[in-house]
Length: 83
Image (cartoon, one colour):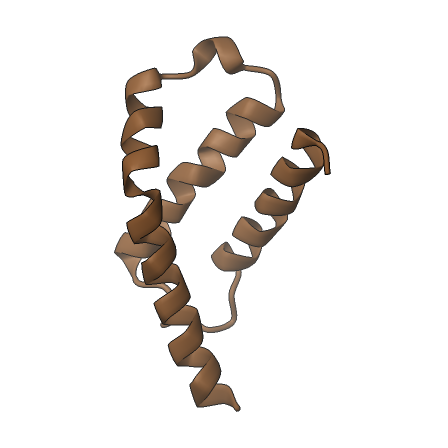
């Protein structure tokens, strides 16, 4: 999978998050954190790499594990309610 294909896949998944039919699935904090990664994808995908703020990238990298765990917990909890 190329970087472009990966970023496109991530973008599609993040768009699903924004339009999810389950408004309680993501709290505002998690939604805001995920939006930051979507913005990064936009900049990286469209070739604005020279505009990258390395300080923000480092902060995102430091937070990604916690954000992923929060995301996984929310999705898993809601999935159990649906099945």
